View 1 (cartoon, rainbow, N blue to C red):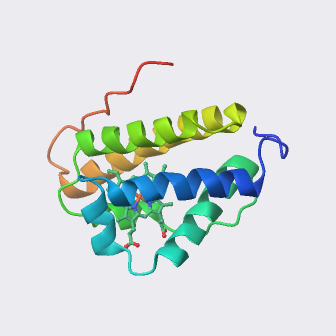
View 2 (cartoon, helix red, strand yellow):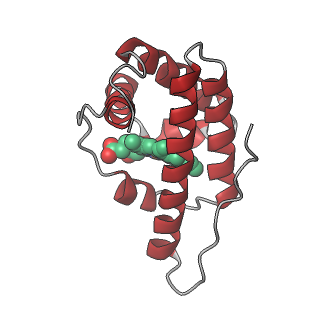
Length: 137
Ligand code: HEM
């Protein structure tokens, strides 16, 4: 279980804001987010709460990521892998490596579960595929 001293809210904020700045500029992910997100200040606050709930167990997040992602058209395993690679690269650059490792592991676990959920909702007649996970660094 993550210790309350794993990281600060400021470190989470830097990770989240740096990552989503890259997401917005990314040729594959940017258009999807820019189409769905009206207010980036609200979205970034929500994502800071999400990561604070995971990394510091603050229980501040109260959204519903599964139905929200299930509604996005044409998501593919490759896109989740691309999201994860960008997230891992951003996490790797953070000075707090304990936080980075914990966040990367959680992101992989959640991406996998979102991808399985996505397939069971959108293509229930097909066998689901797993995400090819990057090798341990
Ligand atoms: C292919 C990869 C992904 C894409 C294209 C994607 C896209 C999006 C978009 C467009 C939204 C905003 C939806 C809206 O406000 O209408 C969103 C929300 C969100 N995403 Fe993702 N996402 C991806 C992967 C992930 C992963 C792996 C995580 C977690 C590790 C994640 C966490 C979240 C959270 C927490 C929200 C807010 C949910 C809520 O408000 O209830 N996403 N995502």
